[in-house]
Amino acid sequence: MRAEAITDVQTKSTTTDVVTAADRAVERQVIDSLRSARPGDTVLGEEYGEAAAPGPGAVRWILDPIDGTVNYLYGLPQYAVSLAAEVDGVVRAGVVINAATGDEWTATLGGGAWRDGRRLRCSERTELAQSLVGTGFGYDAKRRAHQGAVLAQLITQVRDIRRFGAAALDLCAVGEGLLDAYFEKGLNPWDHAAGGLIAAEAGAIVAGLAGAPPGLDMVVAAPSAVFTPLHDLLVELDAAGGA
Ligand code: IPD
Ligand code: CA
Ligand code: CA
Ligand code: CA
Image (cartoon, rainbow, N blue to C red; front, side):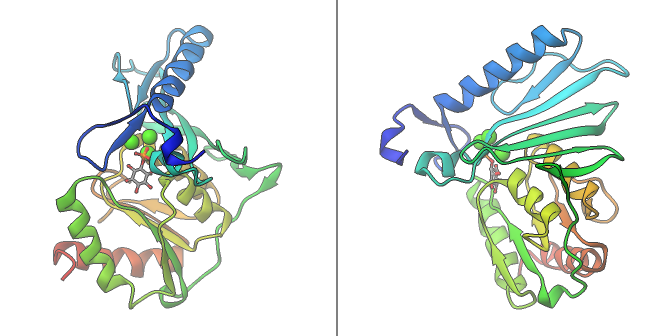
Protein backbone atom coordinates (compact mmCIF):
# COMPACT_ATOMS: atom_id res chain seq x y z
CA MET A 1 0.00 0.00 0.00
CA ARG A 2 1.42 3.43 -0.92
CA ALA A 3 1.62 6.32 1.56
CA GLU A 4 -1.20 8.16 -0.25
CA ALA A 5 -3.52 5.20 0.41
CA ILE A 6 -3.21 5.47 4.18
CA THR A 7 -5.19 8.59 5.06
CA ASP A 8 -5.69 8.27 8.80
CA VAL A 9 -2.28 9.62 9.81
CA GLN A 10 -1.50 11.90 12.74
CA THR A 11 1.69 13.21 14.28
CA LYS A 12 2.79 12.79 17.91
CA SER A 13 5.94 14.31 19.47
CA THR A 14 7.22 16.02 16.28
CA THR A 15 6.12 16.36 12.65
CA THR A 16 8.26 13.34 11.70
CA ASP A 17 6.73 11.14 14.46
CA VAL A 18 3.69 9.64 12.74
CA VAL A 19 0.97 7.32 14.00
CA THR A 20 -1.77 5.72 11.93
CA ALA A 21 -5.14 4.22 12.79
CA ALA A 22 -3.52 0.81 12.25
CA ASP A 23 -0.94 1.40 15.03
CA ARG A 24 -3.78 2.05 17.49
CA ALA A 25 -6.04 -0.73 16.19
CA VAL A 26 -3.30 -3.37 16.42
CA GLU A 27 -2.38 -2.28 19.94
CA ARG A 28 -6.06 -2.36 21.03
CA GLN A 29 -6.52 -5.83 19.56
CA VAL A 30 -3.40 -7.30 21.20
CA ILE A 31 -4.27 -5.69 24.58
CA ASP A 32 -7.82 -7.11 24.41
CA SER A 33 -6.51 -10.61 23.55
CA LEU A 34 -3.93 -10.53 26.35
CA ARG A 35 -6.48 -9.23 28.87
CA SER A 36 -8.96 -11.98 28.12
CA ALA A 37 -6.30 -14.74 28.08
CA ARG A 38 -4.31 -13.48 31.10
CA PRO A 39 -6.33 -10.99 33.18
CA GLY A 40 -3.64 -10.68 35.89
CA ASP A 41 -0.94 -9.38 33.52
CA THR A 42 -0.17 -5.77 32.61
CA VAL A 43 0.69 -4.34 29.20
CA LEU A 44 3.05 -1.50 28.27
CA GLY A 45 2.35 -0.41 24.70
CA GLU A 46 3.68 2.45 22.61
CA GLU A 47 0.31 4.01 21.82
CA TYR A 48 -1.70 3.51 25.03
CA GLY A 49 1.08 3.36 27.63
CA GLU A 50 0.56 1.26 30.72
CA ALA A 51 -2.72 1.03 32.68
CA ALA A 52 -1.07 -0.29 35.84
CA ALA A 53 2.41 -1.11 37.10
CA PRO A 54 3.09 -4.87 37.37
CA GLY A 55 3.25 -6.39 40.85
CA PRO A 56 6.16 -8.66 41.92
CA GLY A 57 6.30 -11.85 39.85
CA ALA A 58 3.61 -10.63 37.44
CA VAL A 59 4.04 -10.68 33.66
CA ARG A 60 4.33 -7.32 31.93
CA TRP A 61 3.85 -7.49 28.18
CA ILE A 62 5.85 -4.92 26.22
CA LEU A 63 4.24 -4.18 22.88
CA ASP A 64 5.12 -2.21 19.77
CA PRO A 65 2.02 -2.64 17.58
CA ILE A 66 3.83 -1.44 14.46
CA ASP A 67 7.57 -1.01 14.65
CA GLY A 68 8.50 0.83 11.48
CA THR A 69 5.39 2.97 11.06
CA VAL A 70 7.07 5.14 8.41
CA ASN A 71 7.87 2.01 6.36
CA TYR A 72 4.24 0.91 6.77
CA LEU A 73 3.11 4.31 5.54
CA TYR A 74 5.22 3.99 2.39
CA GLY A 75 4.48 0.33 1.72
CA LEU A 76 8.08 -0.67 2.40
CA PRO A 77 7.85 -4.31 3.59
CA GLN A 78 9.91 -3.77 6.75
CA TYR A 79 7.53 -3.24 9.66
CA ALA A 80 6.68 -5.54 12.52
CA VAL A 81 4.66 -6.36 15.60
CA SER A 82 7.00 -6.74 18.56
CA LEU A 83 5.90 -8.37 21.82
CA ALA A 84 8.00 -9.28 24.87
CA ALA A 85 7.09 -10.86 28.21
CA GLU A 86 8.95 -9.35 31.16
CA VAL A 87 8.89 -10.54 34.78
CA ASP A 88 10.48 -8.46 37.57
CA GLY A 89 12.33 -6.34 34.99
CA VAL A 90 13.81 -9.33 33.11
CA VAL A 91 12.66 -10.08 29.56
CA ARG A 92 11.85 -13.80 29.47
CA ALA A 93 10.38 -14.23 25.98
CA GLY A 94 10.03 -12.24 22.78
CA VAL A 95 8.44 -12.49 19.37
CA VAL A 96 8.82 -10.22 16.37
CA ILE A 97 6.67 -10.72 13.27
CA ASN A 98 7.28 -8.84 10.03
CA ALA A 99 3.65 -7.97 9.26
CA ALA A 100 4.37 -7.47 5.54
CA THR A 101 6.06 -10.83 4.93
CA GLY A 102 4.88 -13.02 7.84
CA ASP A 103 8.46 -13.84 8.86
CA GLU A 104 8.67 -14.61 12.58
CA TRP A 105 11.53 -14.55 15.09
CA THR A 106 11.18 -15.87 18.64
CA ALA A 107 13.34 -16.31 21.72
CA THR A 108 13.04 -17.42 25.33
CA LEU A 109 15.57 -16.62 28.01
CA GLY A 110 18.08 -19.47 27.98
CA GLY A 111 16.15 -21.27 25.22
CA GLY A 112 17.82 -19.77 22.15
CA ALA A 113 16.55 -17.65 19.27
CA TRP A 114 14.64 -19.20 16.40
CA ARG A 115 13.23 -18.49 12.96
CA ASP A 116 11.03 -21.06 11.23
CA GLY A 117 12.41 -23.94 13.30
CA ARG A 118 15.98 -22.83 12.64
CA ARG A 119 18.18 -21.86 15.56
CA LEU A 120 19.84 -18.50 15.03
CA ARG A 121 23.46 -17.55 15.51
CA CYS A 122 24.76 -14.01 15.21
CA SER A 123 27.70 -13.27 12.93
CA GLU A 124 31.22 -14.40 13.82
CA ARG A 125 32.75 -11.10 12.77
CA THR A 126 35.77 -10.07 14.81
CA GLU A 127 36.79 -6.73 13.25
CA LEU A 128 34.78 -3.54 13.58
CA ALA A 129 36.35 -2.30 10.34
CA GLN A 130 34.73 -5.25 8.52
CA SER A 131 31.35 -4.94 10.22
CA LEU A 132 28.05 -4.02 8.58
CA VAL A 133 26.33 -1.89 11.21
CA GLY A 134 22.65 -1.02 11.43
CA THR A 135 21.27 2.01 13.20
CA GLY A 136 18.23 4.26 13.35
CA PHE A 137 17.16 7.80 14.15
CA GLY A 138 14.64 9.17 16.63
CA TYR A 139 12.00 11.76 15.83
CA ASP A 140 13.43 14.70 17.76
CA ALA A 141 15.41 17.10 15.52
CA LYS A 142 18.14 17.78 18.08
CA ARG A 143 18.67 14.07 18.71
CA ARG A 144 18.74 13.44 14.95
CA ALA A 145 21.43 16.07 14.46
CA HIS A 146 23.51 14.38 17.18
CA GLN A 147 22.93 10.93 15.67
CA GLY A 148 23.93 12.24 12.24
CA ALA A 149 27.16 13.71 13.65
CA VAL A 150 28.04 10.39 15.36
CA LEU A 151 27.35 8.57 12.10
CA ALA A 152 29.59 10.92 10.08
CA GLN A 153 32.53 9.78 12.22
CA LEU A 154 31.53 6.12 12.49
CA ILE A 155 31.12 5.59 8.75
CA THR A 156 34.90 5.81 8.27
CA GLN A 157 35.52 3.01 10.80
CA VAL A 158 33.13 0.28 9.61
CA ARG A 159 32.36 -1.70 6.45
CA ASP A 160 29.10 0.20 5.93
CA ILE A 161 25.96 1.46 7.63
CA ARG A 162 22.33 0.36 7.08
CA ARG A 163 19.14 2.14 8.20
CA PHE A 164 16.21 -0.18 7.51
CA GLY A 165 13.64 1.65 9.67
CA ALA A 166 12.40 -0.85 12.26
CA ALA A 167 14.52 -1.36 15.38
CA ALA A 168 12.95 -4.71 16.31
CA LEU A 169 13.74 -6.13 12.86
CA ASP A 170 17.25 -4.64 13.00
CA LEU A 171 17.88 -6.58 16.21
CA CYS A 172 16.50 -9.77 14.60
CA ALA A 173 18.88 -9.12 11.69
CA VAL A 174 21.78 -9.10 14.19
CA GLY A 175 20.49 -12.39 15.60
CA GLU A 176 20.43 -13.84 12.10
CA GLY A 177 23.82 -12.47 11.09
CA LEU A 178 22.33 -10.29 8.36
CA LEU A 179 23.84 -7.33 10.17
CA ASP A 180 27.04 -7.72 12.17
CA ALA A 181 25.99 -5.10 14.68
CA TYR A 182 23.37 -2.48 15.52
CA PHE A 183 23.19 0.55 17.77
CA GLU A 184 20.70 3.29 18.44
CA LYS A 185 20.24 6.04 20.99
CA GLY A 186 16.76 6.97 22.18
CA LEU A 187 14.96 3.62 21.88
CA ASN A 188 12.01 2.80 24.12
CA PRO A 189 11.39 -0.62 25.71
CA TRP A 190 8.82 -1.55 23.05
CA ASP A 191 11.44 -0.99 20.33
CA HIS A 192 14.13 -3.28 21.78
CA ALA A 193 12.67 -5.67 24.41
CA ALA A 194 11.77 -8.58 22.11
CA GLY A 195 14.43 -8.01 19.43
CA GLY A 196 17.10 -7.52 22.10
CA LEU A 197 16.37 -10.94 23.62
CA ILE A 198 16.40 -12.51 20.14
CA ALA A 199 19.83 -10.98 19.35
CA ALA A 200 21.18 -11.96 22.79
CA GLU A 201 19.91 -15.53 22.57
CA ALA A 202 21.59 -15.76 19.16
CA GLY A 203 24.91 -15.01 20.85
CA ALA A 204 25.22 -11.24 20.55
CA ILE A 205 26.02 -8.95 23.45
CA VAL A 206 23.11 -6.55 23.90
CA ALA A 207 23.76 -3.71 26.32
CA GLY A 208 23.82 0.01 26.92
CA LEU A 209 26.91 2.12 27.52
CA ALA A 210 29.38 1.57 30.38
CA GLY A 211 27.72 -1.56 31.74
CA ALA A 212 24.21 -0.09 31.75
CA PRO A 213 21.35 -2.26 30.52
CA PRO A 214 20.05 -1.49 27.01
CA GLY A 215 17.82 1.58 27.22
CA LEU A 216 17.02 5.13 26.21
CA ASP A 217 20.64 6.17 26.46
CA MET A 218 21.88 3.50 24.01
CA VAL A 219 21.27 0.00 22.72
CA VAL A 220 24.32 -1.76 21.24
CA ALA A 221 24.06 -5.30 19.86
CA ALA A 222 27.10 -7.07 18.43
CA PRO A 223 29.13 -10.29 18.60
CA SER A 224 31.54 -10.11 21.55
CA ALA A 225 34.70 -9.27 19.55
CA VAL A 226 32.96 -6.36 17.80
CA PHE A 227 30.96 -5.18 20.82
CA THR A 228 33.87 -3.65 22.75
CA PRO A 229 35.43 -1.59 19.94
CA LEU A 230 31.98 -0.43 18.78
CA HIS A 231 30.91 0.38 22.34
CA ASP A 232 34.13 2.27 23.10
CA LEU A 233 33.92 4.27 19.88
CA LEU A 234 30.27 5.13 20.57
CA VAL A 235 31.15 6.32 24.09
CA GLU A 236 33.79 8.59 22.58
CA LEU A 237 31.64 9.90 19.74
CA ASP A 238 28.53 10.24 21.89
CA ALA A 239 30.39 12.33 24.49
CA ALA A 240 31.99 14.46 21.78
CA GLY A 241 28.58 15.11 20.27
CA GLY A 242 29.73 13.26 17.17
CA ALA A 243 32.51 15.76 16.48
C1 IPD B 1 10.93 3.55 15.26
C2 IPD B 1 11.67 2.54 14.42
C3 IPD B 1 12.93 3.16 13.85
C4 IPD B 1 13.82 3.71 14.93
C5 IPD B 1 13.05 4.70 15.79
C6 IPD B 1 11.81 4.05 16.36
P1 IPD B 1 8.25 3.27 15.35
O1 IPD B 1 9.78 2.94 15.83
O2 IPD B 1 12.04 1.42 15.19
O3 IPD B 1 13.68 2.24 13.12
O4 IPD B 1 14.94 4.32 14.35
O5 IPD B 1 13.91 5.13 16.84
O6 IPD B 1 11.09 4.99 17.14
O7 IPD B 1 7.96 4.67 15.75
O8 IPD B 1 8.19 3.06 13.89
O9 IPD B 1 7.51 2.26 16.16
CA1 CA C 1 6.05 5.34 16.74
CA1 CA D 1 9.17 1.24 17.46
CA1 CA E 1 5.47 1.73 16.84
